[in-house]
Length: 340
Image 1: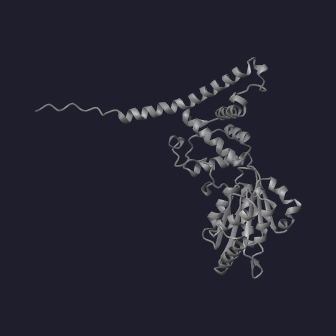
Image 2 (image 1 turned 120 degrees about the horizontal axis):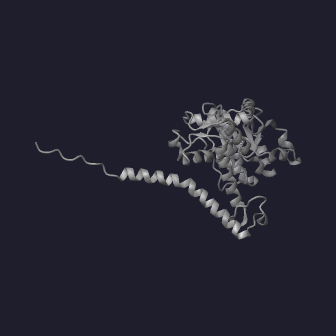
Image 3 (image 1 turned 180 degrees about the vertical axis):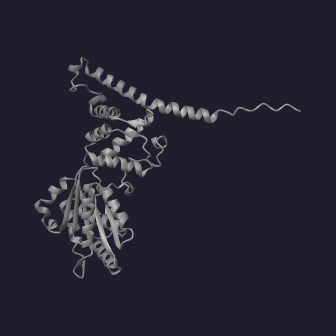
């Protein structure tokens, strides 16, 4: 919606991971270095952890993009809330192998045959497991056992485990002792700092043809950082909303006041969703402090929310109506020339 208004060729703050937008912060560069180091060894497990939205999946997509011309057969396992046998079937499916209505022994035989064939063709197999914190101990053990497939004392498959911060604690449990012995490198991906958050926003905008409109003041960037904590996905979500706000309000520049207005809108929406009955609470949330009974307080909150929504959408409606009227207005015909 706002892309055309700001003369952008695509949406800059989409949530789906896209290697085009990969931003090499200090942390992301280090994480990528660990992944590349692991690839150079060709065996064992590499573990990357980070907060939700820290950019782990984008990191892997960027790695896959680099692997297109290399002799590596890569597969990604995303749905990890599975039991041990289903995890094996998902691994087989990720590599394009038969996996339904066959026994576990047949499944393992197919996997080993595939890995051996890849090795004979001079290729290596790479398995990337996302959301690894959801793996059960038995599922982890099955993945570890796959690393026992070897050819000339070299493992036929290598695994990258990506997980949320709690996966670091899971790895320290007694059940994970054998897996820990095969982890050759691990790295925790933290949030961006204030300067990196600014550079990240500008990088995504430039990727889609940004020429400086809208502009951002220094305090606008600082306020965005304070609200999002430097988590890339939060930055994307917030900046997408900020750009929409700028389009509706016809803003060519954002300052701290603009950012804070959007922050307040989001906080009201969260309060509206979290409060029983959908009301927006004031102060410490007590009806007694506002002098209103609960039902009236909730009604007042809903009215405020509706007013804000209307104020945001009315400019769009006016623009659409104007465009439709312009399109449907017949051209003014010139009067016919008088006969000479």
